[in-house]
Length: 126
Image (cartoon, rainbow, N blue to C red):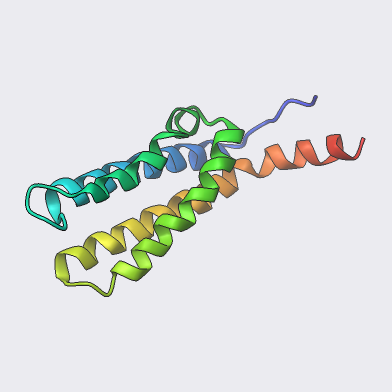
């Protein structure tokens, strides 16, 4: 198997992807527990952060398989952000932040994974 050589842009994209994933996790917990919970004292919606924990270690390490798996989850949080931007003021601001973090992760992960896909494509044909 051919080694993957990452450019500085792709290494930066990996760091952006990891940071935005971690920020998305923190936002999901803080949003439903402290900042604007459905009920005072927190709500069970804090459990929406659990799927973000599953690939966290691999995303942090820049493992391609974990990032591909996380790319399947990011649109769910993007969609939630889009839907909740129509809520009242504090919730709408957090929804915009969630939307932007999910989008930042998605774009950064795609940029980071591009060279891995180029290496894997010829190996699949052989």
